[in-house]
Length: 165
Image (tube, rainbow, N blue to C red; front, side, top):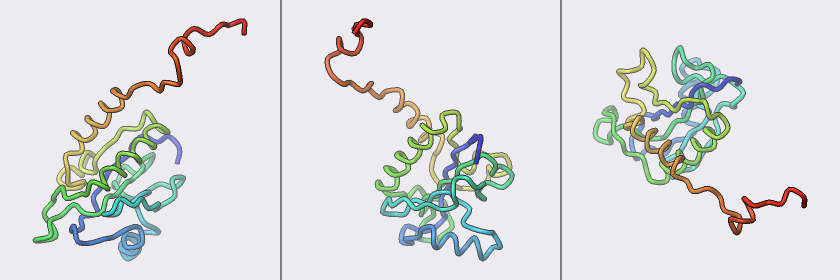
């Protein structure tokens, strides 16, 4: 895919006890008549990152907004009680993997907007991604600004370079 405009976060709408990944989601999507899993990445409950649809192919995860859109899905997102009510039940390992992945993708595509599924027009009523993605995005982007510059030695060696050496 060229011209990446969005990095979109989703929830699989599965209960905390369901340990699912690309294989299971691919089966669900194929059963719906899709040609492959719709997401580019899936993050399992233990934080394992699995690759789904290749990045050079358009995903199928935000109807009407898939062009230039990288899809990330985290397993979980609904209550164990009824399997339907949205719930932020993601694990610490999933949050860590999401942060690392989004950092990598954001570095590769700095102009891409980080979104949650329900941030797109005609998708607002969905619970997905089942957490406050706007708050997460704000904190993520702020953390990038707070990072200390990489220091490789004595400061004078980095700023006072003799141009005649």
